[in-house]
Amino acid sequence: MGLGCGNPVRLAELREGEIVLDLGSGGGIDVFLAARQVGPRGRVIGVDMTPEMLARARANAQRLGLENVEFRQGLIEALPVDDSSVDVILSNSVINLVPDKAAVFKEAFRVLRPGGRLVVSDMVAWAELPEELLGDPDLWAGCVAGALPEEAYLETIRKAGLATVEVLTRQGPEAGHVYSVTVRADKVAEVAA
Ligand SMILES: C[S@@+](CC[C@H](N)C(=O)[O-])C[C@H]1O[C@@H](n2cnc3c(N)ncnc32)[C@H](O)[C@@H]1O
Image 1 (cartoon, rainbow, N blue to C red):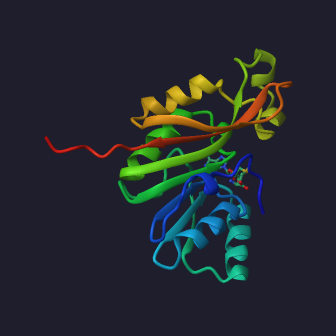
Image 2: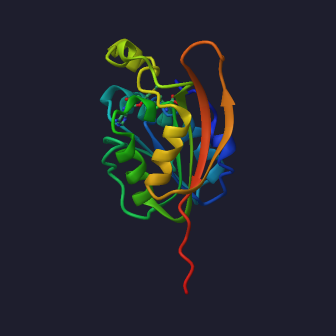
C-alpha cells in the first residue's frame, strides 16, 4: 500500500475538519492515515495519474470503510482541484518523479487556501547528478535521477510563492546520490492594510 520515503502525515499536525490533498496518492496509505486524523467533518483527496494505483486505492478505501476520502485521476502538474480549496497538501516520494517540479509547486500554491500549508516528503540529491544518470529511465523510476539538490528543491518551492520553507527531517545514507527530506511551507494569508 505504501511506497513513500517519509511520514508527512505525522509532521503535518492535521486537525479535525481539515481538507487535505495528497499528490501522487498511490495505494492510498497517507490518504487513509490523514482521513483518520481529520475525522468525518474533514475530507482527504488523493490525486494520481495511474489507473491501476487509483483502482487499488479505491479498493483499499472500501475495505477500510472510509467515507471521507476520494481519489481523482490527474497529473499533479495540472491538478483536478479548485483554486484555494484545500487546507493541507501532502506528498510522499512523488515530486522527484516529475520533470517539471515548478509546475507542481505552482499548482500546489493555486489550490491551497491562504493560510494553508504544504508538508511533503521527497528524495533530493547531495549534489547535481552526473549527466549519465539523468537519462536512465530505471533511475527515474527508482526515485534517483529526478532528484534535485536540496537547495534547488527549496528554491523551486519559494519561487512558486510559498513562504517559510523549512526542512523538518533529513533521512538517508551519506553514501550514494540521494536522501529523503520532509519539507514544510506555507501559503501566507495576506494581511489587510
Ligand atoms: C513512489 S509512488 C508513491 C505513492 C504514495 N505516495 C506512497 O507513499 O505510497 C509514486 C506515485 O506517484 C504517481 N505519479 C507519478 N508521477 C505523477 C504525476 N505526474 N501526476 C500524478 N501522479 C503521479 C505514480 O502513479 C505513483 O502512484
